Amino acid sequence: MDASTLSSGTGVVALLFGAAGLAWGVGTDRISARWPAHEDGSVRGVDWRTMVMAVFGTVAMAAVPVRFGDPAQRLLFGAWFAASVLLLATDLDQKLMPHEVTIPLVVLGAVALAWGGNSLVNRSAEWLPIVAAVAVPGALLALSLPFGADAFGGGDVFYLAGAGMMIGLVRLILGVFAGVILGGVATIVLLILRRITLRSYIPYGPFLIAGAIWAALLPAAS
Image (cartoon, rainbow, N blue to C red; front, side, top):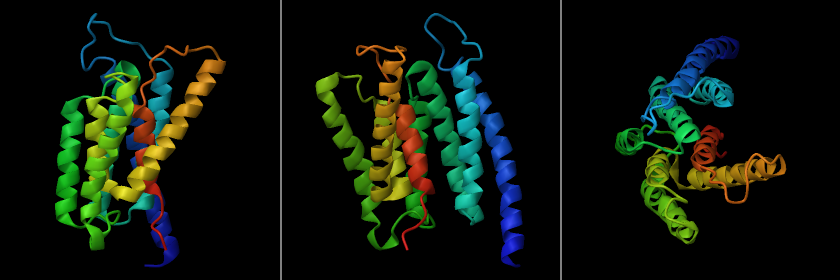
């Protein structure tokens, strides 16, 4: 099979993944409007978050077959990306990353680590993902304590723990750094537009998720 045939086949698969991602992105927005249930029983209507999730879901899922050629890895990261999209939706809507999703992602990361077929994990240093899973969220949690108990939530800790086992130490650090930068830029823009104040609570989960997915898609070092 020549390169053009492979490229064409990947493009078709990417389109299918992207279409599924579009549907899933919109679906997660509607799920997050209802689950976990709001304290006042309200259900948010379609708004800007719906558009964000549609775009993010499409791009994230379409990138899976482009980055990962092996069917098993497409399945592995397709599942991880899909769960990450759901978490981004719930954090945008309710500033919450439910343990019903984050804890299974820790299990998924552990299974992927035991499997040994994850191309993002350095097989010559398999302890590094475990270090990433413990040290990175632990350090962020410690650094957040002076800003209040809710500055860095348990959902963030579990998500980054699972991500560490999925993408390894270096990629996780890059992803967290990118997420923090993205979150800072977004905060400054919202302050300039007067959509928030200095006392407003900004959930950093969506930015950390976006950073982790970006890091997973980075090409392997040559």
